[in-house]
Amino acid sequence: MLNKKVSDFLSVSLDTAEKILSKAEVGGEINEEMNAGDWVESRLIPNSIFIDEDEYARMCIDALKILGTTAATDYGSSRQRDLGQSWADMTRGYLGEIAFVKFLKEKHQIDAELGHEVGSLTEYLPSDIHKVRKGAEQFRAPGMKIGIKTGKWNGVWLDIPGKQFDHSDIHVFVKVVPEGTICFHSLSTSVSFVTRF
Image 1 (cartoon, rainbow, N blue to C red):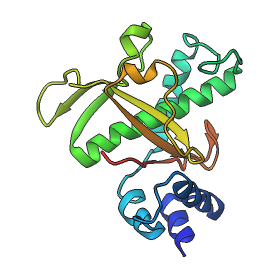
Image 2 (cartoon, rainbow, N blue to C red; image 1 turned 60 degrees about the vertical axis):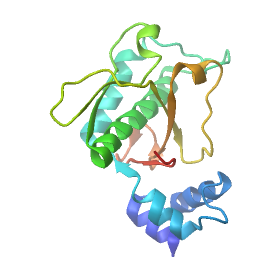
Image 3 (tube, rainbow, N blue to C red; image 1 turned 180 degrees about the horizontal axis):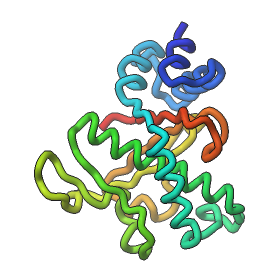
């Protein structure tokens, strides 16, 4: 049973596993060319990255440190988010970023640093990855601006609103699979990249 395999691999409930498979189909990842079993074996499993408690806690703290300097509105609207929602949203984004850093290290032996310090919008908007290095070389600015967007498993496409598309050279979409509410759950968070690199 494929649901069971996904559930066991990601340490999520069977209901969550079923939702993951369903959304992969709705989003076109599972199709005539790639059946569900092949998708699990060739995309989900090899591109999944697991975040440990220390990494999770560090992203929560980083998000909290910068929270007072960000707008509480939903991007492109006037709706105001409360502090808890803003913190959860920012933490989810940071979890996607740390997962991508781990992906670069584990899959491509590239060390990367994020820019989670307080700074100006022009300083941090163009790229979520601020420094990279391979092997023993010194950290340097990356050769391209990388934008990382993070969504929940019920997201089926990458949404880049307004002018954000023009700020980065490439865009990475990371889906986060927490059991429970982000920021306040059992820390069995896993992240999977659902696009080819």
